[in-house]
Image (cartoon, rainbow, N blue to C red; front, side, top):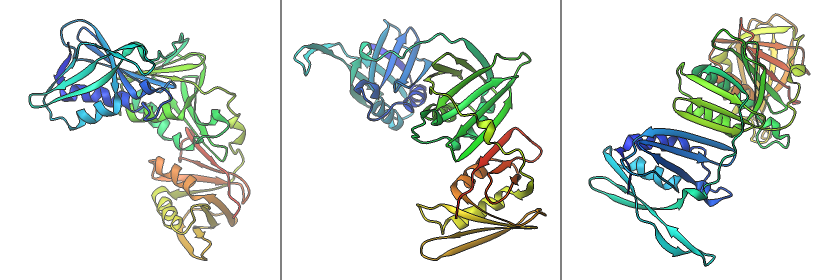
Length: 382
């Protein structure tokens, strides 16, 4: 039974879209497979890890009856990556009766992939065995341009926690209010916040949700760098992003997100502007002499000059100086070099604005002449 007929690229693209979320060693073996379902000329591809589901469609179906099956995501993706750019035919063999490991009857069916010069046969698992992703009624809906959402996630994603026992920190907090979408990420030692204006003229109802880090990674991979619309729908426990022929549904992280506004410094009066790339270069150079276990660098701030210093257990030292327009009292303060490099590498502005209160207070890093982005970093004791 022929299922799909089309150029190799027409199958490779949807497979790459859905395979990113599929785990190599899932709790259920069938979740390492991609679900392929054909109705007329429309073929739907689905990948899931029981936390995130991605679906996309392509008009490459062959004439004939509907069909549905699952096949190893890794094997079919690797195969289509190395096939020549030619027409490919995907067929299903007739089901064959066999004996399962438990001794009961089961039917096996193979997927056949053919080109003009090659033929491959892959084992399938019935689509009926594929676990259904829970469906909820989405009560809130907003629309934002894809490039704006990419920008928003790109400026805060690095501050998410990684496997923190406070599970609600292992993701990004999205909040919609007063025609603004806000993204917040924090791991308890730093915080990144960014606002973007929504498209359209109507105010959206206030909405908030905490998106898991795996979902954030998939969105950053899949969102197009264009102004194509992204529809975000939110229910009590799920969110759904629809864009560019892709539907991504994710479970939300539960738990009360911290009151992040309380940690944003309001009275940091020791201000200076610094060239972003110059500071980033100094951090990269001094980081060479930090240790893997201790990533601290010292800032010696004096009028007109910032010295970035590092040492290690082998008594090695590094020092890099940058001119700054600072005119206040000297400050000696330490920071995690990776946390500084993360924010400076994500920003694209020429200069950044740094606001300090003293050697013990958190630093506030922003973009000059803009209050849409804030990065709060706690100091380190050196």
